[in-house]
Each structure stands twice: as C-alpha cells, then as structure tokens.
Image 1 (tube, rainbow, N blue to C red):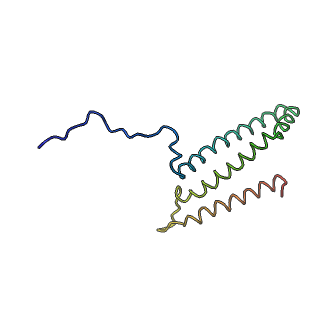
Image 2: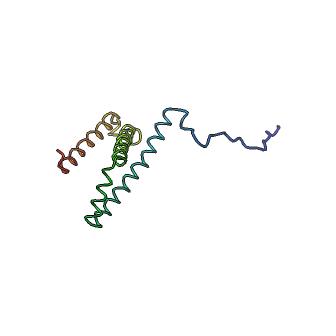
Image 3: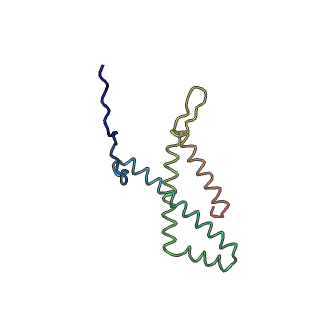
Length: 135
C-alpha cells in the first residue's frame, strides 16, 4: 500500500489582516458594537476626572463644568449616548442566545428575555431620573 505524499508546505489560508469586517453587514455591526466600548471607556475616564475636580475644590469643579458646556463636549456626550444605546440594545437582543433560560424541559422564548431587559432598563432609568429630580 502506497504512503500518501506529504506536502512540504502546510496549507495557509489567506486572511486579510484589516478590513475583514467590511465583507458582510453582520461583521460591520459587530465591529461598531465593539468600537462603542472605546467611547464608553472615554466617558468613564471623563467622569473620574470630574470626580477628581470635585475633590480639588470649588474652582476646579466650576472649571470642569465650564469645559462640559463647550460644543465639542456636547457633541461627545450626544455621540456617546447614541453609541451606549446602540451597545445596550444589541446586547439585549443577543442575550437570549448568549444566556438561554430553561425552565423544566422548555426554554423561555427569546422575546420574553429581551423584553424583560428593556422593561428593567426603563424602570431603572425612570428611578434615576426621579432621584436626579428630572421627573
């Protein structure tokens, strides 16, 4: 019986190092969702800087508040809000696949799992608005 011939070079699949996510809309949505984390991280750092300015005293805090009122800051906040909403909704929509809930032999429908996440999000948002004096 003849032995199969081994090729000297292993098969290497060509994979583009960059821009692979442009090939399919699903990949693009995935990358946009991942990029939202950068803005949320930057917003977190901004809030930590605000906390540091608050500790430094009244003058530092007023300077921080003045910086938040610039047009660039307003645009940053609106962009970060939009990306945070996108990040949240995409996560809530994928939760039934990532975290299926089984009761007995049956699985809870995905619409119920996602729906409960949205309801809880609305309740917590209303509670925060109430505590902030907005409502």
